[in-house]
Image (cartoon, rainbow, N blue to C red):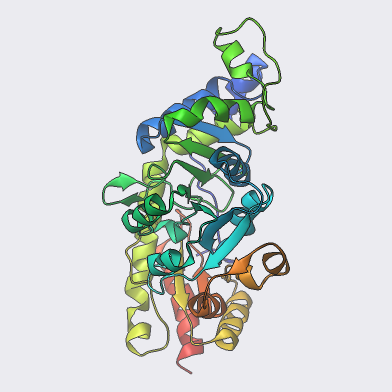
Length: 376
């Protein structure tokens, strides 16, 4: 077994360079080319979205989703505090107010009861974040949104190839955002995708992505010239990135299966420590195997565990600092009710290394190192 054990390591399928070479041979490097469209078609077919638009990042996809939602200055957007800053930033950039609500202690996702209590006359959107690829309570959230006249936007950054009652995550909101960052199951280094499930949003989404022009219509031969017609930005990815991504997407089922296997090894091997009351394992299944997390008793024990694992050559990390307690969160947003679960989870959660090519020996070494700390 090789040390150190990194926190994440991309699985290279073997076709990335082949596809990139094809791009270089055509000299067509800019966005919206053949590889971009092949990736988009794959995502449309597998997820079932009406349209998929590759973007440079999930952050860019969220910003497009915020623009399409029609939120304006003073509107409120309900989201978890336990998420990355991009989830809130996308709406703050439109002048909206993020309203942070608490999470379910079992799934670490938005708690519908807290969402319902946070609804006001100014609520315009609800943004469920599928943490670790585990589905939010989408049926309840959809009902709450419908009654409030709010749009649902899925932050599905971690959720590729996960589902909710048989329906792919990313297909359940008006729009959704995927991430292909280096840390995600399927990666292009940096990258993202806006999934559009409301057909009425497609035309404007294409305009937003093309710097506010109707260039997409021009490329399809629908107009004889393109011009500036709306707000927008440079939300296109490039063909080299898309070529790398296509090689990953084509093996995404295998990558996901391997990650689920590693997740199950952790779950099985850590069971005795949970029985002894030394840690808490996830209560949900592996979903797409994106994250294996545990909960330790308190912040001090987590800090000690991270340091001990690092000394042994193992990279394990914490996750989000709650947005509601961050400087920008206090400046731009507000908390709705108590966020005690979020605060507790943030202090105690530890993410263990997980990547497709990990072996059972890797997992056993990680767990045995943890055991020496917890059982001394």
